[in-house]
Length: 550
View (cartoon, rainbow, N blue to C red):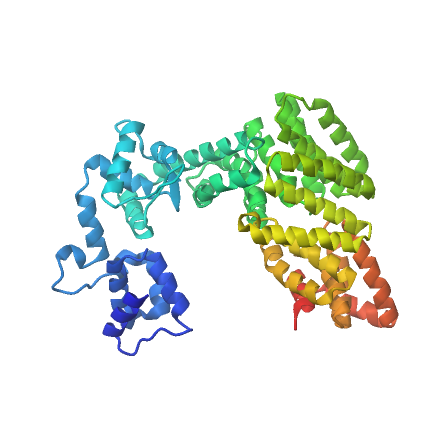
């Protein structure tokens, strides 16, 4: 930042870092990897482009970053020349490996590097040697750890991809990259009931941007529907666990639309069986149909373990829709299939399905008993994220019984856990803070409820589950004296639940009924009806913000 400011002022004495341009300058320096030469060249273009113009043109960095001092060495006069000079010192095979590594976004594993860079001339062991040479020559950065990962600086990556295009290898390299990502995430499925959830996330999140790039290629003109379906199904668990449900649903919809009669049954079943997990709790006819098709395919394939897990998730989806008879049938079949020799963690989806069934039947005390069994299992397996999920179920069950003090105590414990361990937050904090805010509101602890509501909202919005906040936040608005806004929020909530095929969960239903009684006392029926109709046309986001405003 200091270097950019100094060189920018040399080019234009009027330039100064201000609150208006500092974010753009930070972005520029980050995109240039903090490379001094690149920053100097960028700052020199400031009088012509301005800060925002320079940032917008960084994708064209090799044409933008020209014009170094005339007395500088020729290779330092442009960023491209500097990279060309370094590239020219490589052997032919090192150049091949270097350019193919440019397809990776972010970091990469050794195995993925070998898959993408090896060919008929360069075997995987030679690729390993060339990778080491590139690290020694500072063209590749090695992040050493228990499982070393490698990365190109963003500037080097852009240069490498130009070389890929010049070598007419773009489609071949992108296909190899997509196949490498499929191998990575199919490996993650083998560890689903072996590694704790957090350990799996730590192992596979570094390849998320690579998976995104592979999926983007697979839907393009040169892409491959089978690869898209396979990779989307293999990565589905990560969207859920990492709190990226909205993106996961978008990508899964795209892949499911490409399932054809020729699609391999195993790949179709895997993708379809993941859909209700992603959509949860907004489960409707489409999700139930996807589960049913996955069950049918796994039965035909004779894959008992896969059939068991998809039946558990089918049971949960059915219970969530209050189709408790169907939930019972699916769960009973899953329990008949379960084998005691399977990993103990495979009991988790079965117990979870039983919990949801009891919740859907209003058998909250029995649900608490199963929830306690689930909690003890997750603790024994040392899976902190699944332990949180079990605690969340227990918190919601006590809230459904109106035991608000107990629910708040559990909610505060959950909040403390995720504050103590930041790695547990993704995919969890939206639920923890949202539920705690609702229970605090019901208990009358309005100031703390508002604090928790404001903490919950950004995470809930990112997770695409804002509808769940409408009822509890409407009650919060009412208790804050925002009576008209509370009525509008009720109208929005009623409209959303009526059109989404999703029933209210027990806690939301209890809060909704409480608020309606309060509103009927607080205002005439015609005024309440008018305000609720006004609320119907609001977006979920606007309705929620009514409760959060000062």
